[in-house]
Image 1 (cartoon, rainbow, N blue to C red):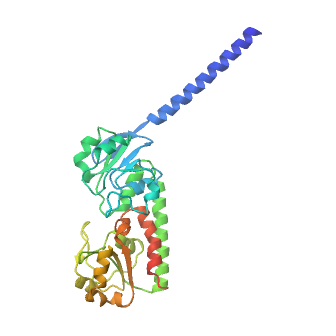
Image 2 (image 1 turned 90 degrees about the vertical axis):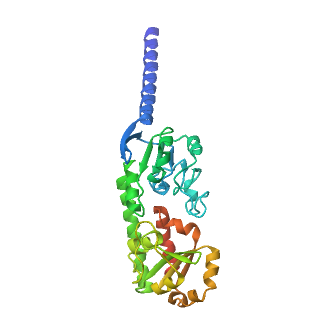
Image 3 (image 1 turned 60 degrees about the vertical axis):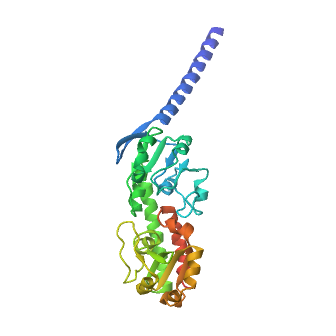
Length: 311
């Protein structure tokens, strides 16, 4: 009997050790598993389930939507490039700032200290590519200009989450159309124009930022005389040129100084939309940069509804 009990105990002990080793092996394999993704630098082997992503490409909002909060990022406010924009700060949590995503270089030392297992960068930072790939696997994405939808889907491909990203985009479009319908029902058929006021000049959001939300996503009407946009550069007009565009409703993004300059201008006071009280003023930060990324755009839908529907 004693020999039998000893044998049973030995078998149980061996089974426990075997299960523990198998579990540890499985966890190690999952942790260390790799996959190959296609990038503009060719095929790159990356972790199948990266845990410490550094994003300097400006794709951190896309990553957050997909459930991958970066440990370090360059998604900062264009007017305050050393700070997170207010609308995204809480979602980035403890992410470290390693630069500004529109710059061509970054804080390499800070990226190294973040101990990444994956780095996502843009073409505009190509000159530091060789340095970064010595730190961790690097995925370089193209410069998508204003094509934020394709960018989101391409980021999702890295994690096999295309269907999730498409569902998010579909829900966004549904919300945009619902709000646009409410605006037309309340305001009637009006034309809308968004501009950035800066030092006496006006940058027209024809096919970018909030302008793209109004025209491409919400399908609201453009003014007949609005200049076309070529590439990522915004068309620029003077105050007199803005008056000639003659939109029914103006949305102006401006600093406090630029707002004061407008208030003191007789030309501004005589613009039809101004005289009719159809002007929405927005602070330069965070609203200038907010219209270029998905979380920002989704939040702006509610803000647009709040600001331009006639009470």
